[in-house]
Image 1 (cartoon, rainbow, N blue to C red):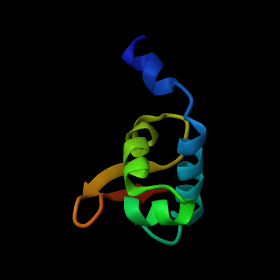
Image 2: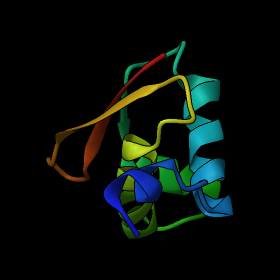
Image 3: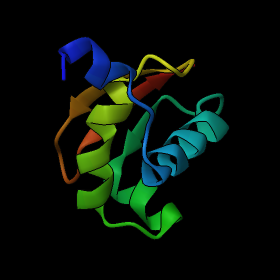
Length: 80
């Protein structure tokens, strides 16, 4: 599978849940901690962190997602 095909592949249901959470809250804030996203979605911070790169690389959404920091939990910068 080529790199282009991998990035255009659809997201998993768990990744869609995370993406919807980010979309719902991107107007209110810019920075999101994996731990806090996990708390809201009943996922572990590790599950969120493992799925965020797929969301970051996906072309089929309207958000800019960037890994931002690592203090006490990975922080993600999300811009609508």
